[in-house]
Length: 565
Image (cartoon, rainbow, N blue to C red; front, side, top):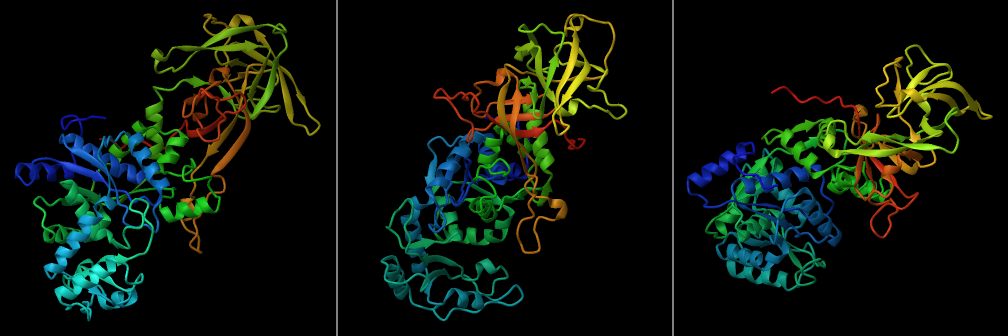
């Protein structure tokens, strides 16, 4: 993924960085992706990861992955590991540049002490509710805390005692001393340290005071030498505080914060608390359920890093929030897979087809192109014999007008094979079709140059004796936004048809032994991926017989069209 400035498109962030370099503000570029390890990353994070990484690449700079682990109440090692895996999978190479904000707790404490010595921070005994009350509103200024004028000596003593664990959680905080009349509420003496007697995944029980995000984040950037702190638009109102912190904690080359618009995707859930609830209530089978758009879920469903990169590039970088149609993401995976993946025949709702005049006990090998648009992928073999499976919808006893598939007396082509003509059928006691009987014309073999009579329909099939039996999962959007994202009670408006399971689909034998994440185009149906979680695998990583599970990545047809340039 090593692009240069010459072969990637520019955006407003690039323009700002170029100006900073030209003006001598910075002599290099360093970016970072700073996730909080309190959940799995989703498609919106993918945009931020790739933006930060590719920006560094464009300017021959460096990219850091840094965990913003300053809140031990919500953080887990599980999330740390999942985030590392996601960033690597997307291709954002952080080499040996993996950092944790908690590694800088000593520095943060020293900088807090520095602010106290400068008269720019004080220990406050107001409760959280009182602090909110004193803060004022957007129309009314706040009022000073009665503890704002404590002496430097008293503040140093109290802050040291907070660090030593002498006070209970919530009893005292350290606040920056800025301006309670500021029109920006974030500047009204914000809390920068709180007491929390909690075990931390990285530092253990060393600390019982923890920095607040708005204080910690700019220091983390400054410690690492980050030049451009690229974040989403919600932090625009926090930028004055970011600048205040780096200015007053004395850094030679303070970083610059730049904001861009978040990406909102239709018919999906990205909020961590909602995903967490779906997981805990068993509505989805984990943070990587293929109906979600966490990066782990997209990978499991069969999306590729290239398709997500294409999606991010198509959505662009702007200052205006916008909603992106989920169909664009589907378009990107189709575009990525259509030239890469083999096309095979799969029957999801099978009925038996018997060719009455095909010699019993005999079979032959037919050949099919792996990808009609990419001949370099070659061909594969398909066994052909007397008994096959076809889709139930490809036969009708009494067809409507213009129906071009099998019905009594009609002739169709079996894809890659022969013309067959329906001569009869069988039903069970409930009246369901169980077997279709046909005869075939051996002169009509595909590729033989036969130019006799024409047929209007072609159907796909799978050889019955050699068929691979598999479970197939069909996905729709998890949220039905046509009725609104939320119900009246605040719960998510879930689509009851978001998952359909086909327990016994039959597929060409060439898929036997497939590996995790291997994907195929199923003829007429869509793109499918071997589920890495629920498929039964052999020791060598190949799918065990009878243990294949496929996830539908995306259907064949799309309503999305790229806008004209």
